[in-house]
Length: 113
Image 1 (cartoon, one colour):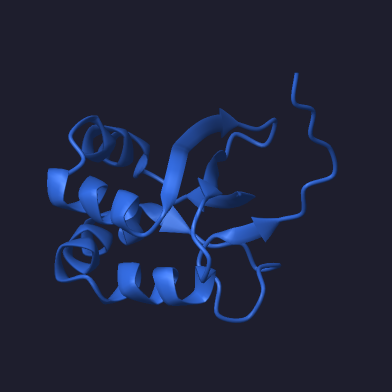
Image 2: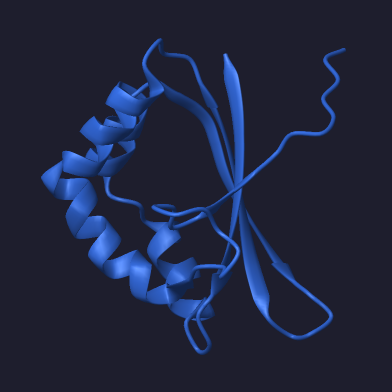
């Protein structure tokens, strides 16, 4: 199992829309996420001292070919439609790696009890 964390900013004026969309995520999108070996997927919201809102996502990948599963997720028509609604609400960080939308984060600590 691989843990993944990433971060992105909420576009100005789009917070309420983003939250509203995630109150009713489409069942087909959720099914595809599970089908692509993603488990325990969460998105957290935080307003920073500068007044901007950021999203932190966490998920666990339980498959054996992350790149192939992410390509299948990105190729799914329902997921692509969903992203046409959510992406205008997001503002990628300038410091993200080439090809990333959400900026990947490096895990620096983990503890299982």
